[in-house]
Amino acid sequence: MTYLPAVEIEYPPEESVEAAIIWLHGLGADGNDFAPIVPQLTLPAGIGVRFIFPHAPSIPVTINGSIVMPAWYDIKQLDVDRHVDVDHLRKSASWVHDLINREIERGVRSERIVVAGFSQGGAVSFEAALTYPHRLAGIMALSTYFATAATVAINPVLQSLPILIRHGSEDPVVPESLGRKSVSTLQDLGFAPEYAVYPMEHAVCPQQIADLGGWIERALIG
Image (cartoon, rainbow, N blue to C red; front, side, top):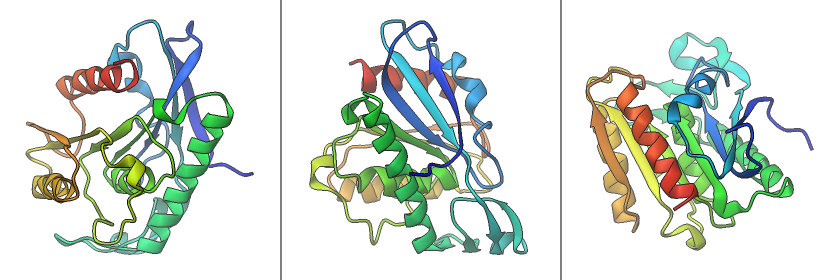
């Protein structure tokens, strides 16, 4: 089996790994993008978490003049509905499934695995987590949108899955309205996502990072 290359961090380093977070970057970035925030999450001692930050393959991206860059899928048109290559997005989701399966083989129970993503990575996270065949710990969707909302085949075992959605009120790349639309769609599907907005653009901020740490603690430790 060939897996996506990734940055891996075990934190706190002195704890045995009992949980995992697979965290996908945004368009044009790579797995190093979010690795530096791991210590800032201030996770408590008592449970070791393996953070996996995979690198997306480089592909031509239509909205950027077909320039080749790291991307989880092609975006064909940058409008409010986001015309994306759904087949490619689903392929990326299948790669995430492979990473989840590897963590299970390493001894981490599926109920202790979070799938997270920023922007493009968040869109893949929705598809990957909601279609996985076993219970997971949750989804963290940051500054993103639910690209496959109309077609996603949700596994019933995930119906009460905890979902955290966070967005910037001044986001010029993925408008905050798309974050609210994801919340509304998930509510219609029977989920109860947690939503909050921060006074920022297409980024993360210190208060958000602190809040993510609290949510991760609740999702993985209780």
